[in-house]
Structure formats: C-alpha cells, structure tokens
Amino acid sequence: MISWIQIWPLLLVPYVLLCSVGVVPALDLFGHHIGGPWVREWFLNHLALPVLPSDAGWALVEWFSHASTAQEIGLHALISLNVYAVVFPLVYLVGFFIIRLSAWSASVDLEQKRQSLKRKGV
Image (cartoon, rainbow, N blue to C red):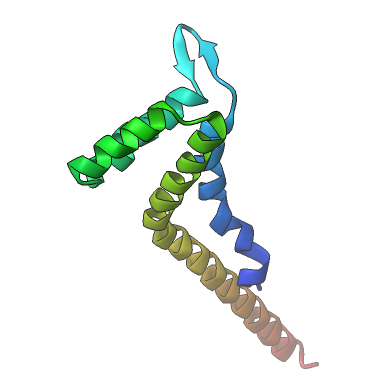
C-alpha cells in the first residue's frame, strides 16, 4: 500500500514546475521568446495585476520596473505559490485517489490469496 509519506513529492511537482519556468534562462526558439524575464513579466501581467487594486497594481509595476533579477524571481515565486494554492486541492485529490486505489488493489490481492488457499484446503 502507498501512503502520503511515499507520494509527498507529488504535492511539490506543480509548484516546482511553476517556479522553474520563470527561473530558466531566456531562450529564442523559432522566433519566440521562452523562459526567464518574459515568463516573470507574463505572470505579473496576467496573474498578479488583475487581482490587485489599481493603486497597488501601479505600485507593483513601478517596483517591478526597477527590480533586480533576484527580486523578480522572488516575486515570481510568490505569484507561483498563489497559483499553486489554487491547484493544490486537485493535486491532493489525485494523491488521495492513488492511495485509495493502492489500498483497494492490496485488499483485493489479499482476498484472492485467501480464497485460493481455502480452495486448496491448506
């Protein structure tokens, strides 16, 4: 049977993926900018600014325009954490169903072994 101790990395994978897309170096691939500052700016424009009041949004844009790379990555990690908070219940349900499926398959396996032993008369 599988337990939460064995599948805890499953809970971290979405957050690590969200953070890593903003940390990887910028690449030009087939004429499109991928990774790095473009992803961090997209996260800011599409995930953070729409939920902030306009004054706070303007202050964040002003701060972001003068931020260092480390500060941008820190903000990206915080925005990714907020997105992950929305995704976490789904990841939890996947883990829950994996554990339930594992427990069900183990109990069916044991029941089949018991029935087999009863038929043999052992």
